[in-house]
Length: 261
Image (cartoon, rainbow, N blue to C red; front, top):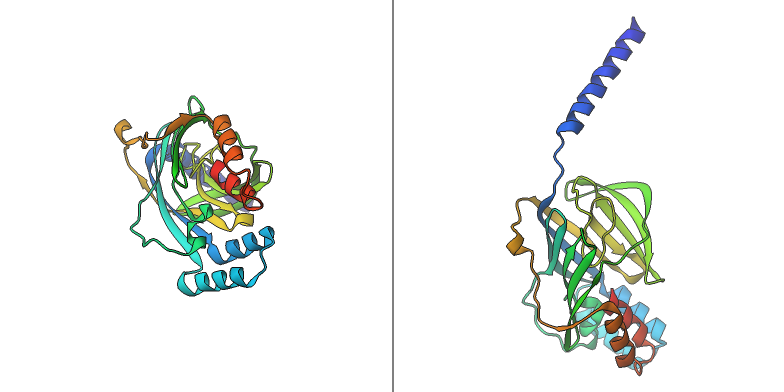
């Protein structure tokens, strides 16, 4: 009798779960708000070490930055998505201009606006790199993700972890949710079986995490990015930056990496 009860209970549970799964609603359009956090203190120290900068001027500059700025630099962005189209846009903030050299580091900036067509595998990106603005049209970056069995909840969604290496040396950790049935994400990161709601570059001390997801209709006219900038592709941008950074010494690699991300 007990065995029969267990079988009936298990069957009932299966039917309930199966019914729930059949009626589950997967999000295909909406707006995601992200928060980018850069550990400024750790990043600056790392930069100075890699550049071999160990002098009184660098030490004083770092101490001045720590005295007048918070440890984490926080910026906002949003991702609008409608089926297989996404538009990633930085949220402009009225922040005072700092005279400290560290405040102008490219790692602290968030200026990319990216329109991605997931059906065609193409994207258009407005990139502001210091004084120059480019409009880069090319294929969406293909990332060889390795999916793990680690999970966490982000903005109310169950997310699974995946790891990858991009640009040969940049270690990336992503958390994606299959409950949002669009293979997108913040900045130029995508390619997972669901939306990326959490992203980290651990060795570079930066993260992007969703703070809210609004399940709402997004009309095609909202899926736009600014179109100002010199038109080119990734290879052309690569060549321009290589030439421009030729005399930058040890700081060239870091600037090049962040500009191409």
